[in-house]
Image (cartoon, rainbow, N blue to C red):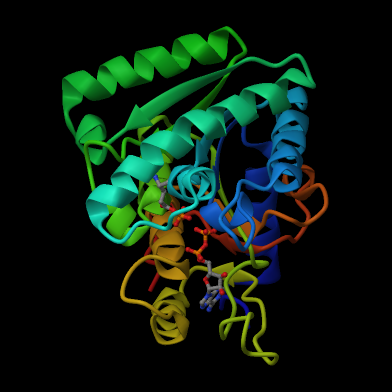
Length: 277
Ligand SMILES: Nc1ncnc2c1ncn2[C@@H]1O[C@H](COP(=O)(O)OP(=O)(O)O)[C@@H](O)[C@H]1O
Ligand SMILES: N[C@@H](CCC(=O)OP(=O)(O)O)C(=O)O
């Protein structure tokens, strides 16, 4: 299934994405942990390899990483039953996650910074300005900021898997040129690719958005998050004229392929003031 827009428009969006100078990359829990919720070193190192490649290509990379609750579960050996327990697990997991990122980026002599945020911080003009100034300074220093939601003081995102929306707001607020959402499947499909062998990857989303929304509503289990918030976040970004791509974190050189304009994942075409529906 593809967008009703022509192949030229999709190719132009791929080129716009490839040429983006400021890129927000978001990685979900599934891209960082194994089936026992332990932080998976090989997955984390692979993400760091890809981000370093993008950075070495001269891009400003802002990384939004989930995985704190998952890493906390693995560290403590307990899944947590209440929201409060998930919050506490995130605080254990976050410091461990950053330790592993620090070690992994050190393989390339790269420095990183941690920023824990809430949607409130992005909505409050004074806090947002402070956040933006910090990011701009880190980027000038060639340091890769790693952002996560501050789960100790907010529970919205533990409940709805909202790092997808946080990364979307960060991309819009920081005037990024591209949002890449990495997950454990190859994009948005016509069915859940984990249990539907006939599911086909949707190449592009533009004027087919309403159809795509109904598909992901129908194929998602659970009442929150999952592929739905990725689609919603990517659409929000594209409505600001910024292309967004949902792709698979395990795909070889996935970010290099994005930067080469290759047809990986599902691209959300930037909407530049035209009527899209
Ligand atoms: N139509 C669909 N297209 C792609 N993925 C889907 C679809 N419906 C359900 N999914 C599921 O959404 C999951 C991705 O969401 P999630 O588990 O929240 O990932 P992450 O940890 O990367 O944030 C995939 O593993 C996939 O099984
Ligand atoms: N702040 C939480 C992220 C929760 C979340 O959004 O997870 P995901 O849907 O896997 O991106 C954590 O680090 O565990």
